[in-house]
Length: 253
Image (cartoon, rainbow, N blue to C red; front, side):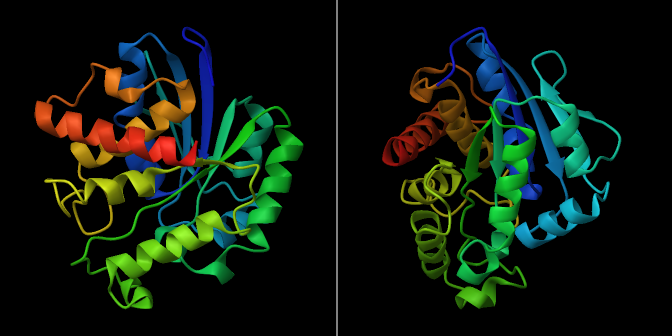
């Protein structure tokens, strides 16, 4: 847990799902209550753990380096390598995640996750390493890899949960349960409407829900008491999504 008015520096080793989760709504949520954050998202579309590990071994500068702060909502810097980001910065939180299509496939995690954890720890021994849990696709998604889960949201979600709760994701890694929050949200009156294209989150309450989860993990504060909401959301949408985000965090606390 971090205290108010301290700068929280975050590095996401991610893809488009971290883009959804941290680049739009997280800073406004923090800024509203006086929490200063600096979020570095290393974006490479569809990047899996195996691809991240390959880029690491080859020290390939392929990541779009997006920085979000209280003062600057979003800056895209020069392309960077993972090793350079780990070497040049100092972070409190570093998140890892699997590509969405591989998130429920047990064989897709190792040996790459262990390699990434070892390298991150070597460069950033004081950072807390977290695991961003991704979400299952919408029921009618047309993603080319959805047939791996027989085009069934429940099967995909159960597979993601199985990987998150097993020895595959080491227990020292703190879980950022974005996937759980989205799945809980789908059980509310909002239904299966959190994604804009079947797998990426919509620009209002979809992204807002994931950011609310991140907010609770970073600050330890109950997001239900945060007054910020996306201007295009209704009060009801904000209330529901903050509630499911909080519940997800409580489950994994």
